[in-house]
Image 1 (cartoon, rainbow, N blue to C red):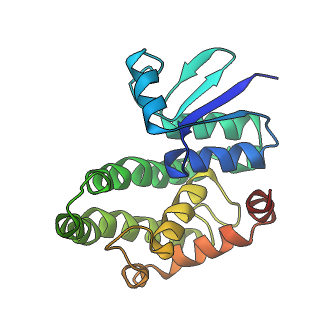
Image 2: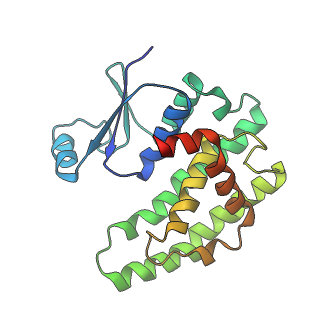
Amino acid sequence: MSTLQLTYFDSPGRAEPIRVALFMGGLAFQDRRLKFPEFAEARAQGDFPLGAVPVLDVDGVKIVQTAAILRYVARIGDQTLYPTDPWSALLVDSALDSFNDTLSQALMPSLFERDASKKLAMRAEFAAGPMARVMTYCEGLVGQSAGPFVSGTTLSIADIVIALQVLQIRSGILDGLTTAMLEPYPLLNALADAYSADARVVAYKAR
């Protein structure tokens, strides 16, 4: 069994889907959570291959890219989280990359904006543009699969990412993004509900 260490900030963010997948797979790992000064110091020392986190250390080898890490964790842990069927895997990969790349990258600038009015304007532009495009696309994928998840009845790593994003917006923690903005996507809302009801997710939250 490999020795695993996941490094990220002391927050959910991009590492939370990985933490959930590791838990679902019953995989022991060190959850290294950094405060920003610790992150800045470690980055200055060259600890992160691309200067960013999350980073998964596998037996001393540091690996980056959230989607790649998620697929690896699924393959060595709960293998139901990543389909073996090529078509289902394509759907999962497409949804996963759409949320991890297009959506996350578009949201990122507003996370660092300190001016409240500018942040709200950025969030409105985000919701009307990238968020609407990605969620409309993934709503269609779920519709084609008959749901509740991207590739059907089995929860995947893509569903973890989608559900956590939907739940984050529902929580109200992201100023300017509201539950009303999720109303055009009933299938993604249902996906998030199905994720939350999964026994493994319930156990993760209760740990």
